[in-house]
Amino acid sequence: MKSMQMKALALAVLGLAGFGVAGSAMACDNTNLAAWSAQATNQGALSVVATGLEGTPSACKLAVRLTGTDALSSAAVVYSDTTTEPTYHFRFYFNQDNIGTLSGLGASAQIFALKAATLYPATKANPFMFRVGITSDNTGTNKLVAALACDNGGNNICLTPPIAIASGSHYVEGALTTGTTGTFKLWLDKNTTLVSQPAPDASLTINNNGWGGGKAAALGLGAHQPGWTLNQDVYFDAFDSRRQTYIGP
Image 1 (cartoon, rainbow, N blue to C red):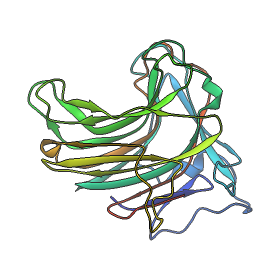
Image 2: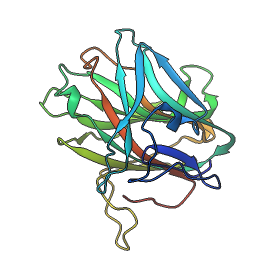
Image 3: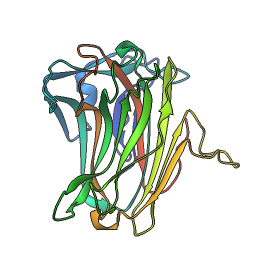
């Protein structure tokens, strides 16, 4: 999958002209989303608004909200690729302060997902290599968790240990490898490009070979469960994805 960077929220595929940086005259509107393959909205809304989330703020960020109770409601941007990616790295910034503390055990929504190249297995098929979400474990602090495709002979989903999310803006980075001993690693607010790389906040070794790798990425909200806070924006910025190299802040 081509490396993508969303600076000032304007996402540009490498090799194309940039869409602007902080301090430029670029307008914060939905024309900034043109580099994505599609927008998926069903009882949800996407809008590009001023002031980014990075340490040195970019000009704009993506505001995403769910507006309906349908479990299939969504509001996301999607990037599809004709190439299957057996290894995949991603990084983006997010701020979930507006949704407050989620109410009830299992209240959750997906914020990022990588669709699998192969629908696997034949029964109880899981269409995603992984999905990253914000969830509640009823302890008063929202958590970041990933649901991974894994050939476990059951529901074919393995969950990473939950990571507590403090208030404010954060960046999350993940790394996936595909195989009979596939791996998934997740960092929150840690610079993976340091010579002495910090340990991941969550990691699993799984058999995800049957799914083949990733084909399409979705950034935004979807697949929410009861207790998710509707009609409140979650913000996203500075998305980047690469085949093999770590990204950092």
